[in-house]
Length: 271
Ligand SMILES: C[S@@+](CC[C@H](N)C(=O)[O-])C[C@H]1O[C@@H](n2cnc3c(N)ncnc32)[C@H](O)[C@@H]1O
Image (cartoon, rainbow, N blue to C red):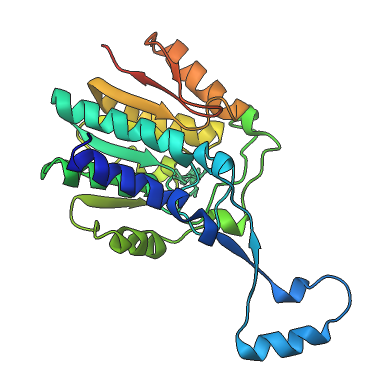
């Protein structure tokens, strides 16, 4: 029989992915994209405030984070949420010092979950750092980072979620307080000078070589022994994988990497 901490965190995960409410997880269809004829129907629907919605989600897809959800606060899916929860709990159980950081938060779901873990454990000392441009992924800088050449996610509206929206998402779960701190801006401008002393859990989710490397350079030296590094996109994006491989090779890191699902990996810092 699981106890209240397990039950609270399980509920949080299933809310944040919307796995509990998949039957209500629908995407609005823009009525101006109405296909075919019968456009006069629009004149009937619009004034009544009626919406057209598309059912998109299925349980298997959401469990492994294979879609961009219409309303869920995270796109990482159930398996990677379970991983980040397990890592956070392990460092708390083992007394590994340091804060929790995610670089690349989108709607904030993983950070909300990390704050929930601290709340469930009654931790009043650690901070959850929420690092993002809050305007999406930068365009590729192929000159400095050839691995990102041609990979352009900039200008995708769905990836640009404002800091105010992320704060509102924390508030929805009653988890916005001074143990949550936002680092707003491009990683190369915010992470190196952020007032973070020690990191017990570093979760990288910035997709590009540049975004991954900027985060590793600024924050890996602050990861404490016994802390975790989680890389959301290692198996999904070549650029991200190349950044991690380059950094590990340069710094002689040989801690075993463990696969989470089709996209994510993690390791535990041993020295
Ligand atoms: C795939 S989304 C993150 C998904 C999120 N972890 C979740 O739980 O759903 C990538 C995020 O990284 C941010 N990002 C990527 N590169 C960045 C950079 N160099 N500086 C700041 N933010 C960046 C984007 O704004 C976006 O919110």
